[in-house]
Image (cartoon, rainbow, N blue to C red):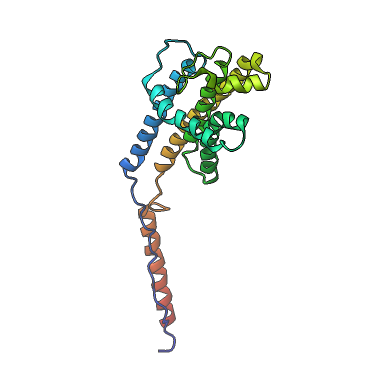
Length: 236
């Protein structure tokens, strides 16, 4: 009929409530990351002493021995295989080079993908630098047990002899050792900080209502009353 409003009255809809944060989803990742970085701290503490200088008869920590035997050593030998066709010098250098380059490539890929695993990868760059420093420092005396037992196959004795740098073995080793230690410490700190930040972000709750529920309900009622009064005015 003329004079009557045909508009429909719609009640304002409240925002959908946020899904509550599951405590398991918050705490399990934090605990797992904490356990991983605790193991890295143990490994690092063992490496600080063992990788500085080899002493005949010294005992290495179990964790250090296992990781070095089943990770560092295969990487080192794999580097020799990768460079076998590039001449004697690169073949010998390839073992130590690949030890460091492999985790470094992992670190670069993780950073490019913005993966939170990058501090873990960076830690192994530093540890392999420290391991290589042990090999360099041992070059003059060649006391470090080698795979196969042939001391004439000592990589860094050969390399430093070829480059006439045998007198600088200790200095070069120090650069690698302390540089690796700094990288390891930085990686551990970065990993712990990222774990804590991820935990804090996961606990941020989204407010279910942008205003108090009672205020929202009162506002909706006022809007409805105003709409009814306007309709009655049109009819009058």
